[in-house]
Amino acid sequence: MTDVNPFGGHGTLVSGERFVGRNDERRLLWRRLLQARSSAALIGLGGMGKSSLASKVLAEAAAEGTLTGRVTVSTARCGADVLAAILAMCQPAAAVRTAFTSAGRAADTPAIPIHDLYRMIREALLQLNDYGGHLVVFLDEFDSIREFPDARDFLNLLRELVYYPDQVPIAVLAVARRPIDRIEIAAANISSFAGVCETMYLRPMGYEQIEAMAARSPDLPGGAVDAAWKYAAGHPFLSEVAFRCMLEFRTTDIGRVIQPELSFYYKRLERFMRGEELWEPLLKLASGRGIEVHVEQASLVRSYGLIDENGEVWSPEFAAYLRPAADAPPR
Image (cartoon, rainbow, N blue to C red; front, side):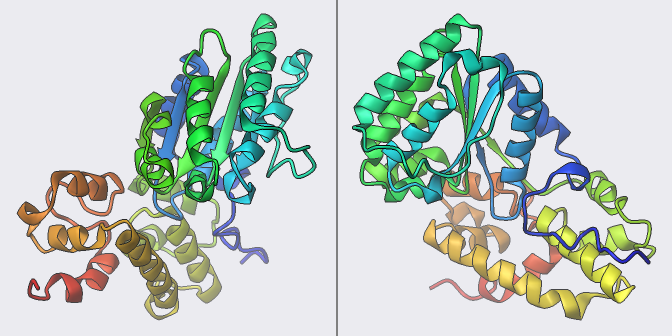
């Protein structure tokens, strides 16, 4: 067995040979961001690989000569910080042939009113358009906008920036756990930016993609893919955890060692779903009481990939976690 466990980096950004699958999603995002030059939202639960997929698409775009940049929204104090970082990406216009990535917020940027930043970005992008350039911006952890004191102004101005892609050459890829319209309503009681984004939900991977993940190590025991599917059912993060455990213990019998990891993830997922008022709808859907669930809530639970149209829960292990609560009599 090799000394380095190729699955030991689970929970971190996936790149290089660790990145497998998601070809359909990559093509869809490429067409939206690069061909249509329009904005998109990538939504999914924790551990689905949203940031990794977005980074992969941006890396491919940069390789083709497109100007790219990234802002981790959770590190910004306000919307003006995000716009200041975007401004730094698109100046000077002559830099169109040099793709680069900007991470985090521009901490040393002088305080400039948010509307002035918008005008400066728009002017710089119009110059960029003269050079035939195009900027694609990855806004990671977009959920954090709910905490911005200038959320309303920021969301309205962001929408104005991306609304005219033929004139103002910028496309935004917003990555979040919540749908963009829910974030906007919570942040500013508006829904403006959501209207110009094509939304994609990132769900668990298919069996063949997990096979491709397993192919990174010839030392996995026989039956490793089936074992990983049993415990993770295509969840990328949990699949890497399962493969790591199999290599460490040299067996597919990892039930006891992986259970704490599964329980920890399920509890975090439950907290998130409760906060979104989706936990009770999930329990009702899982227990065959879908008729009691509002259609919008049912649609969102299914969009996350937690349950299918037939009422089958995403994973047998997660179904077992739900069962005590789902089987409880209604209050």
